[in-house]
Length: 436
Image (tube, rainbow, N blue to C red):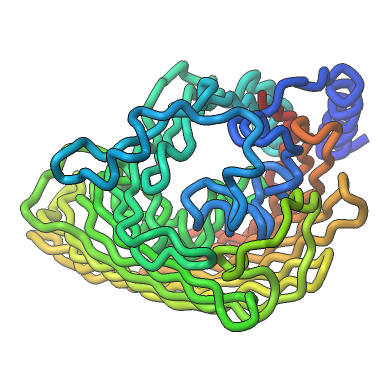
């Protein structure tokens, strides 16, 4: 049997083994415990959010329209409600969760690289993520996570931010919220943290024109103003954001220039982006496995300046701009994005790098617990050194609502001026992950 065939056979056997040995994590993550509901209320499959999960996020991690009536564990008030009427002569009351707002995600990877000296490598665990998140009163919410990388035992703070809703809470509307801390910016075309089911990141947010230059998926110290409002007939609606970041991916600032960005998108059809504009007459539990038919589209721009540690380069002035589209037809989700970039590397070795990246992905839910995935990517660099075309087929399987197995392959065709193009199965991965 060829080497590649033996590697795939071994991976399949290990996939079967971890599937049979997987123990369900009976206690559910933060919001599932808070509302005593399944992960599939907000997720198509963990970690990808469905339309209801996005409306929940846009509502400050609260169930749209009937949050207080849906709570199973009441918050602890930090002051009498009457204090609001006395403000500013009294402290505005707040609240904290009635249970610890924490959750843990564990990822166990089996990496398959047929052309490497070691064909199959166990990365157990590939990562362990601790989350803390939730609302704290009627106008404040928070989110954060700490990541332990298994391969080198490195621990780092990935995100940690608070956000204040500035206008009075109105059903279906959240016109202005201030988000501050180490943030994931809404300039990222599609979030690598709550839209992506594959282990491979989206190229449009992940690529870097040169070592240590910026990528749109970077989580960074910054301030973001964002808002969202449901459209007519309680369908779709608008989302926008504008922000300022350091542009250093969470590291200390190295220049006096701050990066800035904006993004706007509109959704036609489907669930309102902040839920319904009308309060329901009675309490109804959100449906699990929500499906819809909708079309969303938008644009974004990011401009900044940095000082990457590159020989002969004292400054990188960069710009990213692009468009995106997101189409859902019941069980099928097709989404795509295109980004154009320019990096002006200044100094003794001055040069200008022009880049472009695009991708399109289709996910189809064959059964509520089985989803095949197919993604095409293309990344181009003006110097021609690292132009990449990639095809990523995968299948995501829920063994339980909070236990998932992912099988993924990555076919690459790298084209360069100095190397012969190569095609074929470059690498694959089998991942077991669970949340509790």
